[in-house]
Length: 309
Ligand SMILES: Nc1ncnc2c1ncn2[C@@H]1O[C@H](COP(=O)(O)OP(=O)(O)OP(=O)(O)O)[C@@H](O)[C@H]1O
Image (cartoon, rainbow, N blue to C red; front, side):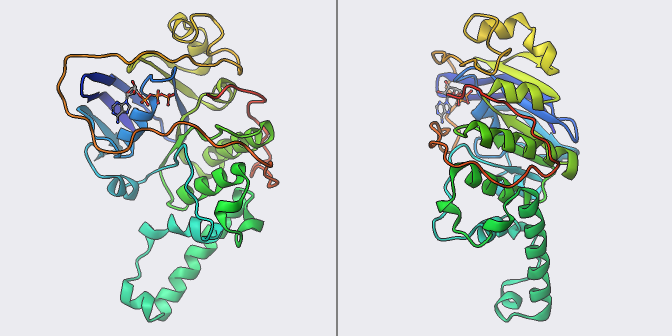
C-alpha cells in the first residue's frame, strides 16, 4: 500500500500534512504519534471514511483515493475500529460471517430457495470462518452472542470479522487498547501470527509503545499531522524529533509506559470543507477477562505494560 503526499484539512485545521509512507507486503507497519497527531484521520482516509484533500492511496496498481469504504474493502483493505459495536444477539459465528459477505457469489434468489449451489457456498464460507475462529482461539465461542463476551475476546471477534474478508492489508485501529496485560500479550501474538501465518500486511495505530516496538517492522511517526520520523523501530526510538514529540523527553518511544501528550490543534487559513464521516472514537471500554485461546503460532510476543490513553 502506497500513501503519497496525503493531506487532510478540516475547516481551519490541517489534520494531515503531506504524509507519505509505504506498507511493504507481508510487513507490520505502525503509525504512532501523540494525541491529535493525525493517526485516526490517516486511517479514516485509507479506509474511505474520510476523503483526502489531496494526495493518493494505492494498493498495488489500484487507486483507492476517494473510493467509498465498501469499494476499498472489496479491493482488499479491511479494518477494525477503536470502539466496538458488537451485537448482544448475533453470535460470534454470525458476526464473523458478515465479513464473508463481499465474497459471496450466490444471488438473493438462489440463497432464498436454498439451491444446492447456494448451500455448498454457504458451507464453504462457514468452514473458512471456523478455520479463522480457531486460528484466533475463538473456536469454542462460535455460538455465544458476541456482545456479551469479555472485551479482549470481542476485539478478537472484530479482528476475525476483518480477516474473514480475506484482506491483503489489515488496518488495526488501537487493537490492544483497553486490554489487560494478558489480553494484550495474546492479541500481540495473534497480530504477529496474522502476518506470519496468513501473509496479510498489517497497518496499525497503537499507543502501547512496547507492543509497537516489538511487533512492527516499520514505524511512521506523525506529529501535528506531519511525518516526523520513519524507519525501523530502533531508528525511530533513537530519533530526537520523536523524543521531542513525546513528552519532550527521551522516554516517549522507548518504553512501554510512555504516555503520549495531547497537542492543541494546528490551525491554518484554509477553507477546505470537512470530510464526511464521524469523528474518531476515543475511550475504550474497560478490559475484562483474559482470552483463553492460545496464540495461533504459540507466540507470546507483546507488551507487558503500556500506556494507552
Ligand atoms: N471530523 C473532524 N472534524 C474536525 N477536526 C477533526 C476531525 N477529525 C479529526 N480532527 C482533528 O484533526 C486532528 C488530528 O486528529 P486525529 O484524531 O486524527 O489524531 P490522532 O493522532 O488519531 O489522535 P488520538 O491519538 O487522540 O486518537 C485533531 O486536531 C483533531 O481534533
